[in-house]
Image (cartoon, rainbow, N blue to C red; front, side):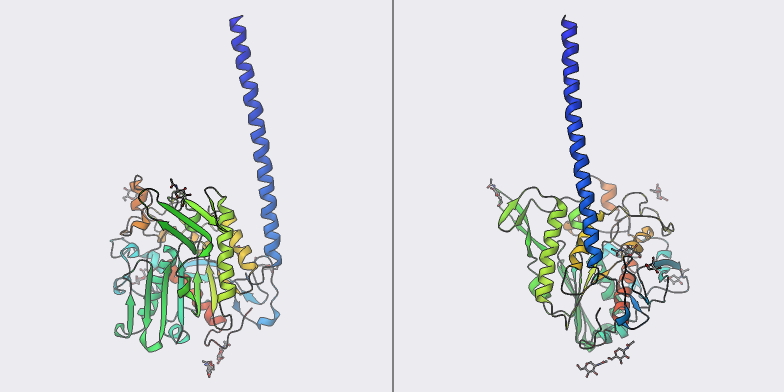
Length: 423
Ligand SMILES: *[C@@H]1O[C@H](CO)[C@@H](O)[C@H](O)[C@H]1NC(C)=O
Ligand SMILES: *[C@@H]1O[C@H](CO)[C@@H](O)[C@H](O)[C@H]1NC(C)=O
Ligand SMILES: *[C@@H]1O[C@H](CO)[C@@H](O)[C@H](O)[C@H]1NC(C)=O
Ligand SMILES: *[C@@H]1O[C@H](CO)[C@@H](O)[C@H](O)[C@H]1NC(C)=O
Ligand SMILES: *[C@@H]1O[C@H](CO)[C@@H](O)[C@H](O)[C@H]1NC(C)=O
Ligand SMILES: *[C@@H]1O[C@H](CO)[C@@H](O)[C@H](O)[C@H]1NC(C)=O
Ligand SMILES: *[C@@H]1O[C@H](CO)[C@@H](O)[C@H](O)[C@H]1NC(C)=O
């Protein structure tokens, strides 16, 4: 009898467990389906409103005949983000890392002892057209009297360092002023051109409010309030934004404790929802504060990492497999796409994700030196901590991002604040 009852007991437990399991399974299936539906809906939205989302394409014909379609190609134009890396040993990098005195330790791979510099000799070539090389003096001429701001996380700092070195090497050092003392603000000035290129550190674009209090530290990510430095962004002629990495980086210690939206605090919120709210806050700021007759706005897409297979460790060659896909959450990219598509201001999407994905060979890996505390991720994983598979050696891949930024200026004829053709 006793044996029977324990078996019965087990059976009951087992049946109960199965029942609960089934419910969970059904729930999660439902959840997935509804998610898929919303992804499809968002794609539909982005297709109908893909107008402003088009890539800065190379214009081979008058902008009036453009006819867009899903793949982002405009009729009669070529997509500068669709192409391949070509090894060109005859072409040396646009500046020497050793000669750009303010290049940070973090990305000075050569100075940090990285052997082999083949990674500097690859050139990005579009499938259907020639992309102009970045000509520092010409770019400065186009930027005469203008202010460029690059706003975002450390990957945008990487891009700022690249652009600052590119322009620095085009003029005599005495005709420049560079200030890199602050971790959150950096500036390059070319005196003879009265232009500046500034970096503002703002990894979420919205405000992260950190209240240090002995009893109760709190870090509140204010989804409805733009970064405090946004007051200084106003009036810039060229703005390059990015965000994304700090929302989702695997392994990155979460930088906030609570979300705030419309006066309410939230401990938990789906990351996609929070991200979309923040993007809307940014989009609203751009739509109300940016004078479109004067300023151009760019959004740089996600910069891929190579922390998981294939990793950046010991890599000397780019990934040549064109079918290679990254693991970055598609939902985040969709949200960016949808947000930009719904804006009044034309925002050019600097779609560097795919082209950078091939370049697993171009990260600092163990030839990185870190000083800033902000970059500390998980000290327990020493290997991962000392290897950097997310930033890029300089000279290197961000020079190509800037070349595409420049190409977009040249091809849309940004020679004059009053003479720009817009999509
Ligand atoms: C994009 O689509 C157009 C027409 O739908 C096609 O002609 C073109 O080849 C496509 N381009 C790419 C890069 O797939
Ligand atoms: C970015 O460019 C790549 C390569 O051309 C393309 O596959 C991808 O769809 C583009 N992404 C977006 C969001 O347009
Ligand atoms: C690659 O770039 C370097 C400069 O870093 C240059 O000196 C060299 O000639 C180029 N070619 C090869 C094969 O390294
Ligand atoms: C800590 O701060 C948060 C946010 O300001 C607040 O909601 C919470 O009640 C505080 N906790 C304590 C113990 O004071
Ligand atoms: C990288 O190379 C070093 C030395 O050549 C070797 O000890 C190490 O195991 C390699 N790491 C990987 C991940 O291949
Ligand atoms: C760009 O604009 C300048 C001045 O408006 C003009 O002289 C030049 O021809 C234009 N270039 C192109 C490629 O349209
Ligand atoms: C720029 O615009 C001004 C008028 O605002 C004009 O006088 C000047 O010629 C233009 N420069 C170029 C290079 O187009």
